[in-house]
Image 1 (tube, rainbow, N blue to C red):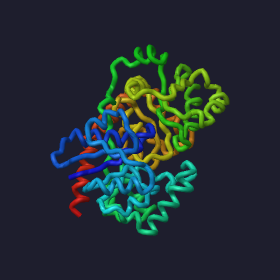
Image 2: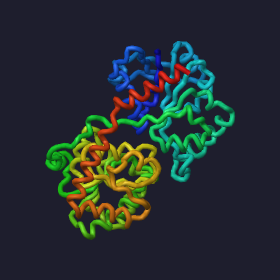
Image 3: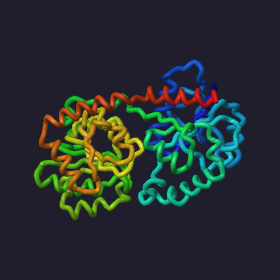
Image 4: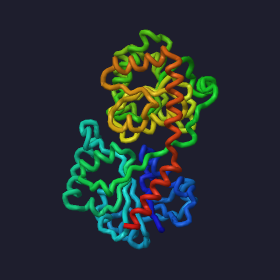
Length: 369
């Protein structure tokens, strides 16, 4: 079984879907399946370790040249990590095709989607559906059942073409012993803190987070808030923090190396993540795997993924609701310890090995059709 995975997105920097893509490729190779011959297809040379483990194929990104290159590889199956709407000629290739879908924001909450998804991707995909091009994809993988239902409805994809395969949690995410001493030495973080790990997008609802934290400070004056993730320059965070009078209590770490995230999760009193939309929500699971209590929302796929391993807020747009749910954990040690145990148990149900096995099953099913 000669399979080509288009890894071109990895050439352009980190993102949630790219974390999935790289982990999936490594995990498929780790399976050492005797009937899988894996080729990784992208546009420019890379020093990523991944390309030392499989056949690396570099093709021109020019229209038509890329598709001719794919056609010349004589693959049994081609796997995209997104619907390749910018390359309509791909839909006409004779090779069997699998597509992993990660997002539905432009269809479900368009007001929170970046303009290019709202005004370009969404209408183009709708048009492709009407023209029957999406029917040329043999199989679709979704990262949650919630996403599968939404995509089936939004793009009229036959349910028999949709298979849910959950993402995994890297083994890096485990409880860290004595994290506070290491945090103080690395980042100067001392005392009790709440954590939020996200790249800034409006759907992450950080305005509510900041307002909830300001309320919590009234009864927990020593509590601080640690923010990790890039993109704050695109937000109105500074203005909100100044207005709320919490500047001295908020630490913005910006981008944090992944190797430091387990100690940040392990040292936090809670991860507070009042997100308005997730199709999976890897941040919640990473925190849960580290034994960090999680306060999050009950929106979209979040309840499906966290199950009973997190506190769900029914109205994450209300700062009072987020603050109250968090305060219950801060003032009840027994509840926090019990939640941390349930969180670890739930997170242990997700692994990249299981993800790879699920994707490999989809490959076999697709080729047998």
